[in-house]
Image 1 (cartoon, rainbow, N blue to C red):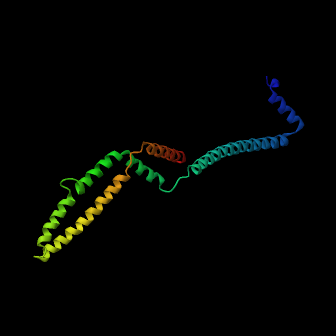
Image 2 (image 1 turned 90 degrees about the horizontal axis):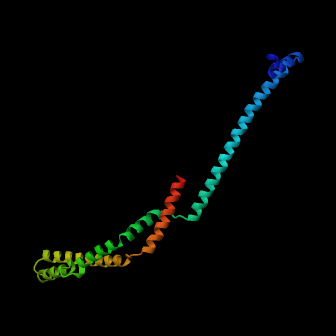
Image 3 (image 1 turned 30 degrees about the vertical axis):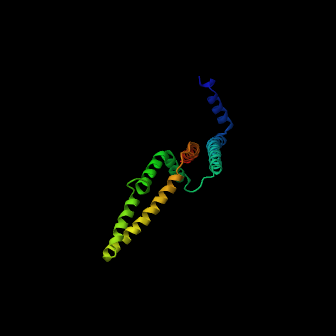
Length: 182
């Protein structure tokens, strides 16, 4: 049985040829070749993975550069979107505040003018009354200023569905880029 084995036959030939030292050198060289071959295969796999990662990172960089993001843009867009989505409610509340200050029958500014007029008639009787009237004058000026700002803010609030869509698209792109780079 042993005579039919290739391995046995080779061992007889090597023994007869006295190739033991050459066989030992060959086996060491072959083992080193297998180690080097495995190291090469591993390096080739790593290089392929690095090329793939480089391609992906290059793609992400192109996406980021083409997005032309600005510092604080996401926060500004989210705030604007929140305002636009609530524009109707904001307009209602601002108009109610303007009415309470200036336009209604019981407007604060109108009532305050009445109080100032009343104190003006007695302000010459006491310095305290004069001081109170002056403080109320200051309050009236401040309230008129607040009312004017409220009117300006109210006129700036717009119901703009097209702008909402535009902001949603931009935020979606920003969120997508954030997920890709995370």
